[in-house]
Length: 266
Length: 306
Image 1: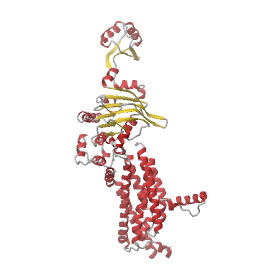
Image 2 (image 1 turned 90 degrees about the horizontal axis):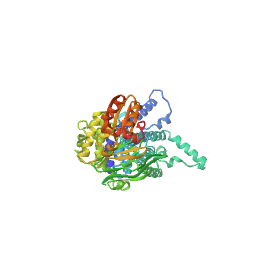
Image 3 (image 1 turned 180 degrees about the vertical axis):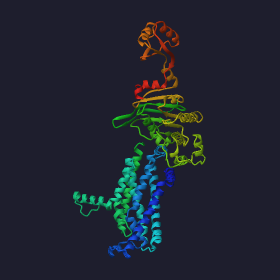
């Protein structure tokens, strides 16, 4: 696996898509900060925009609130999904997999090497996000105040864990279909329409199993990521989401390994 | 026999279709084994199984004296270089980077190794260029270089000269002959260009509809490709009657102006004289040997299938 990992890391740093994603991430941070700044400026100045005092209070005022707002926008998980699909599918798309599939001692190593590279990408994306938010807040609107450092640290750590778990599911979907389109579309729809998906799942659970207080989102990695993991999450929530992420990661990794070993390389 | 690769009733079934049906190949060390078959005959599927990319539905193969399970557990597939269908390359990376990645995956650390490989296949001066700018011939040569990473004992090349111009074909032929003769590599090569294959192959395997229909050496092939007298003539019926009258029965009428005679090859001038005396006008007459292509057509059910 170490040899496969070296190969994938070599590709990781040579691949353009990762740098494009980092550029898009940086731009997203800048645009979010700028849009909040424009909104708050419009409300506090004489430009005539009046959405009420309560709306003004909802806008972020500190660096950690800006970071929290960015994560709630699901940009990171969206970029994670895109990168995971692009990184996994490249060697199947151009046929490079034929050069390496038979020379590795165990093909499972190819799955884990990809997952480790994706984990690195997720860590780098989180670090870039934190730096961009800090730099953006200081540079664009002059905010340097951080109220909840613990919240940011926890959110980063849990963000990495949850994103990694989601990426492992995306890798599994790719291993099932061997096509980039299905996991890409599924992942993006899941991220963008997660609330509708979970509301529907809750409704089905209520109608079929008569489980009125059951929340499907609590027991899925994406659900925890979208609704429960934030800077003010309780320890109980963090532990539950960590366990859910670990279970999803373990299951999808096992399935991916079985598939890469059993399925023919085409 | 000292076989480096054999298969035992190798079969691959996709739902109701048998892509490979009880194939028994025999490849000796140092051979250039020409694997011949029309599109969809099962060549690529067989080669994919032998290179560890696909699993056989039933049957097994033995390479280096080991069966498929042992090959997998001992990681012996790394001793087989493969180029299946078109070369798998990252277009936005250089040839050097593509080779570097395979070297990393194979555990090769020698810094000069990649340069040597690139020079061996004639890409020494363009190794830093993105492979998407390469011509088809350059890509095929890079594909062979990829297959050579790790110094494999066996090379499995599926249609390596497809889409190449005559010069490209000649370059690949030269490279393959060098690898076989100078480095002792056993090469299994499939191709549609049969006459080209006949210039390098030391053994042939012919596959049709998933079944191996013949396995033979060039000498055996020559023996099977009978010599014949070809007569171009205006009146084939009169000529046929005359041939029977002079006791020549082993001939066939190829078309309305052509007769192929398969006996008394050395008496072609007497046959010509006999036809002229009987006022059967002969426009031309020559002796020829049926080529690999014709033999292949006969074995696989005619030219329509090719």
